[in-house]
Length: 80
Image (cartoon, rainbow, N blue to C red; front, side, top):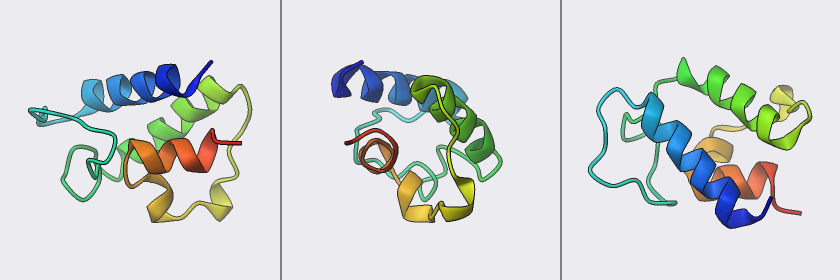
């Protein structure tokens, strides 16, 4: 799976879970800070990331900046 597909899937998941749907969701849109996702959504987001990756995520080392936006999520969990 390439970076375009992964980012598309992440954006789609975030948009589907958003309480207040954003007019536009870019890769650099802050998802927690802008209220698109709640802190409770983060658990489900991590599970979704694990599903895409096919492996567990080390949540004990997870920092807030790691899930700031789609670019950060991709860089943290998928970039090699």
